[in-house]
Length: 132
Image (cartoon, rainbow, N blue to C red; front, side, top):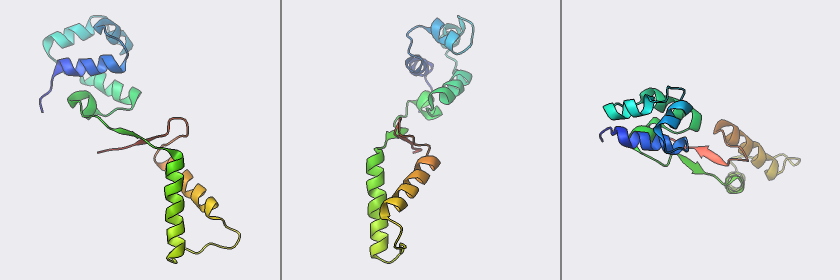
């Protein structure tokens, strides 16, 4: 893998939804001519990449090398179904025993809520951050 300044700038332009380097420069907090100056030298804009990683929740691998697929959409209902099936299987094999007042749905909801919190999944974005 080789670093290609032009490709890196194309990804930055796409993320910041602009086609002009001077607009990108301003959005990143630099002077208007920063982008064209850095790109013409063939330099790698590491500081800009760091800002973009934080702002758009993308990996440095994506910005520098174009390696994609860092976020995978998760269907919350599919997650709940999988957790329910796992809890049910654990009950059937006597790995866990529920009290008579506890429903499988309560256990499922508790586990799903914990997964959502730990993995930073919210019902609006329905995204699970994946590191590959």
